[in-house]
Length: 67
Image 1 (cartoon, rainbow, N blue to C red):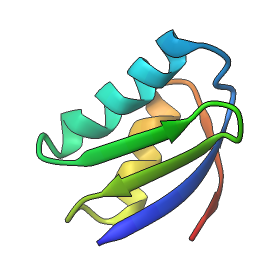
Image 2 (cartoon, one colour):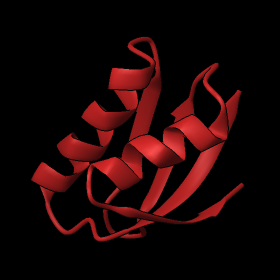
Image 3 (cartoon, rainbow, N blue to C red):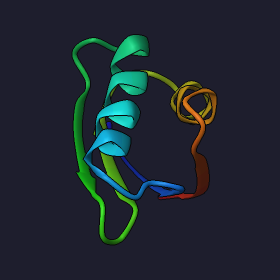
């Protein structure tokens, strides 16, 4: 399943790496695409949305919406 998340707080490539790593800690096979300019994170994963949101929150970023 592909999920589109909007994430606040990302400002650099380190942030992109941190969000990607947080997601992959919960699903090593997840496909993650981050658009830093828009804050959009596309995730293809079998994990529940709440688990992905929690992982991003734990990394210090805020999920503002999910599609």
